[in-house]
Length: 181
Image (cartoon, rainbow, N blue to C red; front, side, top):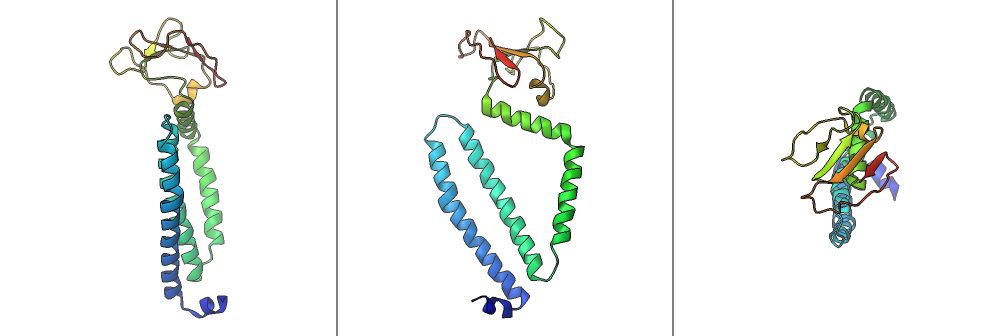
């Protein structure tokens, strides 16, 4: 069975790779992701909707990257040095962008856990000390911008504003350092 594939030249093999990649794309998008979308649509929380959207984008990037690597291999180019270089570059970029990655991951946890909601008044000890509050509402002042990662390491208190639809009596300590009041 594989002898036939070995006798073909590189370009027809690349064409077969493109067809196979497209078939894999159809299977994943039509069956797997469509089912995930339907399950996500049945829930009230939008976290799963965001996760499905992320997975749609991520699988396309991974599929193209794997097809590219296989295509290089078909044309006789060694991919081991390429993968090693990509790994080293990934480590270097990760170390250089440590704070940015921490902010991104903290933002993901904020979206997932929802310790602060739009309209809540937030008291953050890192901003001006006791008594100063910041609001997540666009109409209230003062508004402050701090790195998202510092929300998980700084004592933070969130309470709904009087016009907020959330209950004013919620107080739930969180493992990430948040406390609701």
